[in-house]
Length: 206
Image (cartoon, rainbow, N blue to C red; front, side):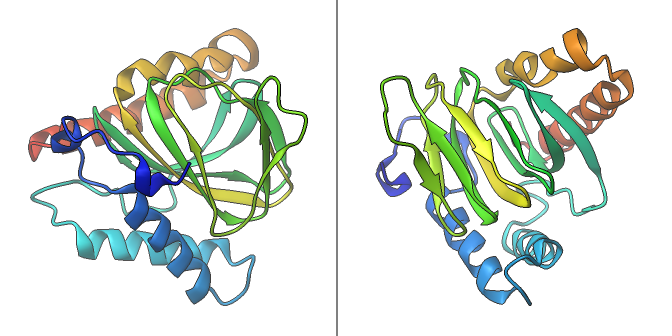
């Protein structure tokens, strides 16, 4: 389903970002990159655009693109850079140069996965053919819809979610608490997430 068709008007008052505009931004970043695998250039383009488009009095954007951390969730492992985190929205760069595979989770939010570099495959139970997502495409995952997904080597994406974000935290931390026991990453993830949510609350963004 096209993200342009996904609307919940009664909830829109809580949201700042628009899925269609973010997909357009992802495609613009791809077009302006020096090469198809210039992930760093795409990220810089995205962050520069967001900081110039959204006033700091309305929404807080984390422009420190050096704040990467591991993320283990649903059996998949990659790296994460939090661009925005509030109670109702988040915007990440997520990916891995190695490739990974796992469970999407039963998320209490609509998730829009905009492929920047590489390729992602996915499927739901009952599907006999895989879904295939390439640069510029958006993989829309409605809230409460589980899938198996695979990100191939060198795949990175701009991920946007809108919903009740704190309810997503258990899924995001479960692997760290029960499997990897990487408490430093858990601490770093929690610290940055709380900091970003707090910064947004200070400007009235829930």
